[in-house]
Amino acid sequence: DAGVIQSPRHEVTEMGQEVTLRCKPISGHDYLFWYRQTMMRGLELLIYFNNNVPIDDSGMPEDRFSAKMPNASFSTLKIQPSEPRDSAVYFCASSLQGSYGYTFGSGTRLTVV
Amino acid sequence: QKEVEQNSGPLSVPEGAIASLNCTYSDRGSQSFFWYRQYSGKSPELIMSIYSNGDKEDGRFTAQLNKASQYVSLLIRDSQPSDSATYLCAVKGDDKIIFGKGTRLHILP
Image (cartoon, rainbow over all chains, first blue to last red; front, side, top):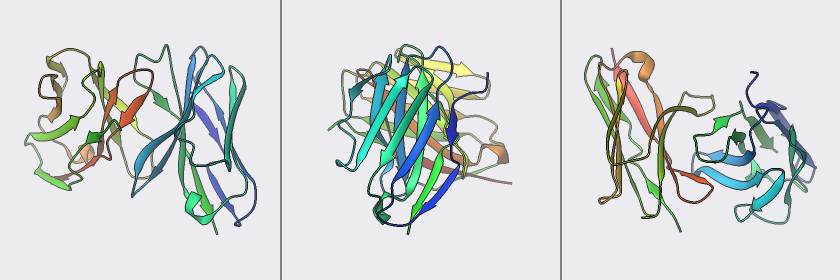
């Protein structure tokens, strides 16, 4: 099993540009989570999906953030327009039935300059 | 606001000693509890899960849960330099897991 796959690993972009982060969950997992990690705030849940349906997006900071899961094997997190305060490591995680611990991807380190 | 609290550390422990990491949580309805280890620049890795009061042992790791006190702990016996990392306590109530900010553990050779 290849685990949770995220791309890109690193992204540097200019303020105002659109950024798209990608995630492929573990095959068979029915829950997918997007987290953001910073030193100040730790790991924050942004949004999660169950069977491709968004369940809770209350952690999405503002309308500049959007997430989609068009099928069971792919999800995107988009930031438009990006701002320097969006700089963080963004993790995708997946889980079976949501009852067990999550498996995290390697993360995307986003830097907005 | 559901919260998970941890001492940020760093916690320094001599090699071979027992490291004790603690966590409190605010949601009394929480049902599942986890400990993740995160090395610098890496993603969190699940090392222990516990679902009922008491102790659960796995190798050198012991997780302890006290729901009445809303308290979770992780003991690491015979600490090794490779145990130096940040340990994240995580608590699940409904469908989602809330993470503490983590405790940095430093094992002194």
